Image 1 (spheres, rainbow, N blue to C red):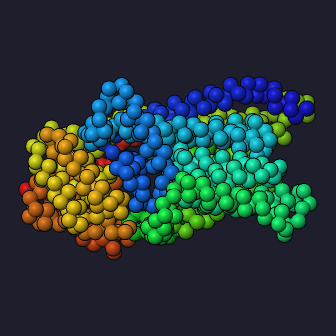
Image 2 (tube, rainbow, N blue to C red):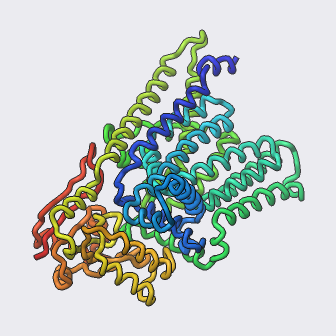
Length: 578
């Protein structure tokens, strides 16, 4: 009888899944042109630059804030991109390929973004399979995919070359085999669960916590089959799973082992960054930030409360009362991750995604089980069933509308792009302009050939270095940039710089900027907000004083304001210094 009910409610489950996946792909691809040819999203440029740098022959990324698997996969995609362009006659030589990147990197960014968008759709598919496998009901899998696919903060990160979306895929894939371990205990499932977890660690380090649900699934299987917990036969499957985890972590990011000291230093930096998020101005902890994010976040435009978050929280409460074996397994990873991230000073929707995928499954499960129980004795639909599904459809509809508005904004010019175009039209080339240190946060202007040559010399003499690439690579990269400098270039005077997680006060002085010849000063709201807190007044007194003087003493000649409906980006202000 239950099977008949399931079949009558979703007679075309395969068709529904295809519709959800096609819709997900459309949402993920719509707006992938955002910002181009400017590079406006943080971290995206770092991953792309490292992927291309492998083409110089050094496969050590020298940068371990992220593992290297995403960079290696992107490197392979760029190889395919080059050969396709070479066959089509777009690129005659590797030098042409390199020059194109520096002249207009749009094609390279689009290759990576399309790959991430496709991966995001694969995540939605894996969410269906895991939801179906965990609770043995395809309706739960379909509903989980439907709830998660239109989430604006999921779709947003599917637009950029970041590691988080690939992480979700390997996380769900590993969990699929973890559920199978708890029921069947086949050696192949241990191997596949460990391999998927290892590739996940090689994407972003947090899947190391998957060792706990793998162990718990093994214990559940052992107890259910009345086997001994302390025996050689108990240890062999775990050795296989954890061995596969380590092996595939090595395959995906080998220099985490081969360049262990840099890898270890990066792990320490990641922990420091978590504690001193927002450049040391953050206070307290993020324990309440993630629950609040489910209900209210920056992507909400039409409604103040995210109804989808209500479903997710309701699903978690329902799981607490049900407490099945599958609930304990699904809880392991997100709980450990939450306890780890909650110690940090700030929460992020990007960091929350590995938590939300499990909440989507629990929310879908709660909806299906509550509506099953609310069916009347005569088989007719009850008022509670109607109310629950109406709430779900309303939540999905509002979420989808918010995401559509977001994607519409991503197709429009960013304030930083508008400001760059205005500068190139109204300010003569070669003019000295002061810009903040965070290049993605502010307007992106080409430097003069002389400035680029100075950087080349500084890298060659060892005067300048970076954690991202070797000095030799950086000198070569800037030499390539020198060959692609457009006519509209400017003498850039950078204000500030980074020392670990703190902003250095270099050039945060109006007299110093004038002495260095700066004619204009550009500020970005994506930077200035850092110094607009009580904590900033303690640790950044020079910068706080500087921005106050700018607002009071300098002449504002142009301002670019964002709009929640059609203009993305931070507030950009252009001041005249003389």
